[in-house]
Length: 133
Image (tube, rainbow, N blue to C red; front, side, top):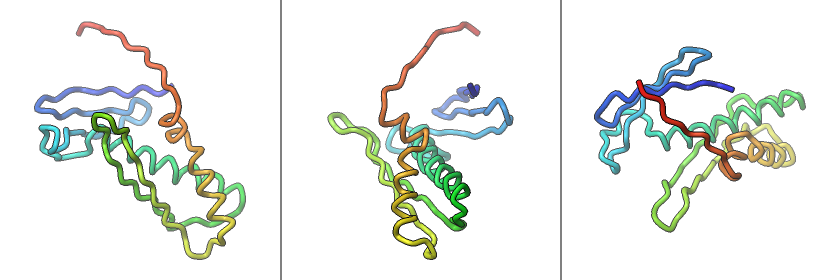
């Protein structure tokens, strides 16, 4: 289990702190949703999580196979959900040119097995409660 603490800073900004590393990042609402777009929006972070998790999962697999995938780049475009339409993610995996088609095909399958991808396509349980501060 990993704890992440969010402090709402006001004016649609928040600060997130990753408890294990104390790394901090800021979020802002997107311009099309009353924000200034000064940082990642929460949904941007979901897209970034999907792309980075895909890359990390491919790297872990490639290391076991002895494949060098240095230079791999995963681009993620997403269209936020709108009434009647689900959120759409488009991943473009820019593979190193020295990989053969069999390796590329295998890496694409492996990327779809990353934990974020599996979380987004499956059911998610929420345990929410209120505490007074």
